[in-house]
Amino acid sequence: MLKEQNVKLGICPIGWTNDDMPELGSANTFEQCVSEMALAGYTGTEVGNKYPRDTKQLRKALELRNMEIASAWFSAFLTTEPYEKTEAAFLEHRDFLYEMGAEVIVVSEQGQSIQKENVPLFEAKPIFTEEEWTALADGLNRLGKRAREKDMDIVFHHHMGTGVQTTAEVNRLMEMTDEKLVSLLYDTGHLYLSGEDPVEVLKTHLPRIKHVHLKDVREDVARQVKVERSTFLEGVRKGMFTVPGNGSIDFLPIFDTLASSEYRGWLLVEAEQDPALANPLEYALIARNYIREKAGV
Ligand SMILES: O=C1C[C@@H](O)[C@H](O)[C@@H](O)C1=O
Ligand SMILES: [Co+2]
Image (cartoon, rainbow, N blue to C red; front, side, top):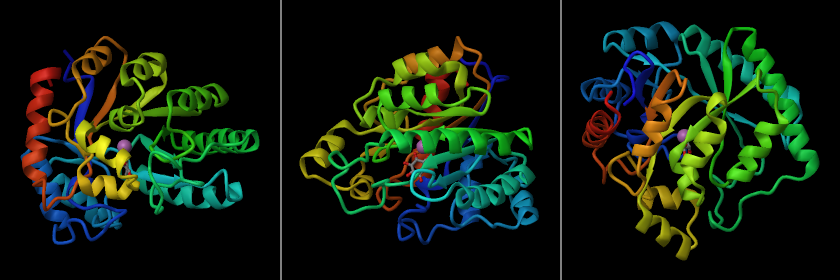
């Protein structure tokens, strides 16, 4: 069982509003989103497209609900654009998160990503060349250094449809980057959907994991996405992702492994699906109850 003093429990806004498809949940307001998160028993969140960018305003809204910012997504383009361009955007993002009190910065390499492209998710992921791997690893080390200036860490988000998706790719990235500068975000749903063993990846990289996304997968829908050659975003609309306790992943060995480790940090429920089909508060509660039952927090 996990210990309450070791982990904080949060939920991402993507179940209420989706940054990649703003039409999903467009009627859901920021206030509704954070109020329902708090009501369901969470104390942290990442940042969604409806959140105020003014740090004072955002802090006040969160404090009223006993909530805090755990982190926020950052898209890097280290394999396709000059490093300086990614760094300039990163510094703005870093400073915003620093002001909000976050300790980690989620970084995903979106160079050549098919996340938003009209191509089959299971057939068209990019494979990086040697040069691209080097550009990615060097760039991440440099971003990691910039994060350390503020006593923050970057946590790399492996992701379906990107060049860092599989176990082998995660392993390679971890080998090529400096452990003091680049940490890992562990996202259960992306590993499972890719056909990896999430427990193996967790055990291999535990000391470098500094942020966790708890995402579940509906296996039957994932199969349909493969057969129908759907895109990533079509898959999301069809419901391939859901909250822990509602899909096919057995989270017990994952929670047990985290419990017997040194892991200290956030566990964030993250389940993008159509809020018109999956009521966000209802699903936030399903996950909250499941985590209490299986992880003891
Ligand atoms: O952390 C995440 C952020 C989303 O924008 C992304 O598409 C989702 O799948 C995810 O894991
Ligand atoms: Co994630």
